[in-house]
Image 1 (cartoon, rainbow, N blue to C red):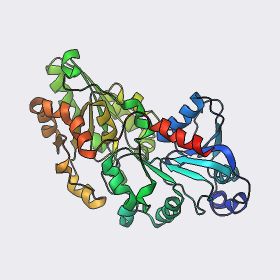
Image 2: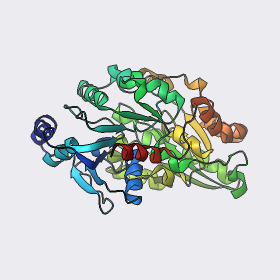
Image 3: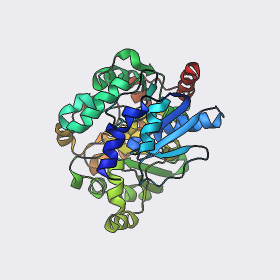
Image 4: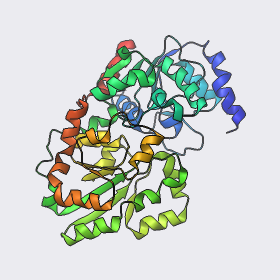
Length: 380
């Protein structure tokens, strides 16, 4: 895709398509800037399709993304003539990240911004000094276009108006669609880990601005073989998985030495686009650093560990909304502290999720997708 074509799709084509009639039964979806068929938009899209509702479903994806979408969904190149046409003639926009738009939505259009996680690190206009000027320019137009911004907890709802520069009245305190399938009434206090004598750990770090600080170097900090030896000695089956940030996964997979490292240490690499409910199903303990994924995982009432080996550096790089010391979950700065949690703080570990949900003021009840669809139907 040439820069010229992208320029036309964002700056010229919308001038004409904004004059065309709006299609009241057309919904345009996008996820992570057209890089994925995933997240909250995917859940909403599949629910609408599953209920056989009479809507035209259009997904905007980048040309290079080779994904097979469900039958009945239109797949359109986001940076194209048709991408601009569908975007500015659809009644509804549903996204989970910023739209790269110069022209805001039309007054009759409705834009559901579902975002992609509860923020720990500073985001959007709160992190303006760390974000590219071009991104912030798009963000201004995106924020002016938002009709509703979906929130999963009180903590997020308090932050979003300033971070997105929108009125608090636009916040929907209804939970998040991708988490509907994670809601559980079961407590983790009677941990299944000890009963089944096996443990499955997922490591899901966020990305660092310095490219060389991502990927295998993040795994090295954990000393996975020490973890493996610890659990094997106790008679456990040990499984280790890693889910890197989408910004990291592409570069990692293209390097054969990285793949050899994963194979040598028996680490399963989770690719992008796997729904959270599928990703978390086989996980007993989540280890992350500053990724918002742990707020979602808490809904399953399983163990969470924050592995903050570079806390001071990352704080200087991005900044946090709250001090990590305030979060009611176990934290480790190195592999020795990590092992100590499993050995001496196991009760705190299995109670960490419920403590965190109380701390953030959880809104998730498993019905957020239906509530969004109800809003769509009322506008029809």
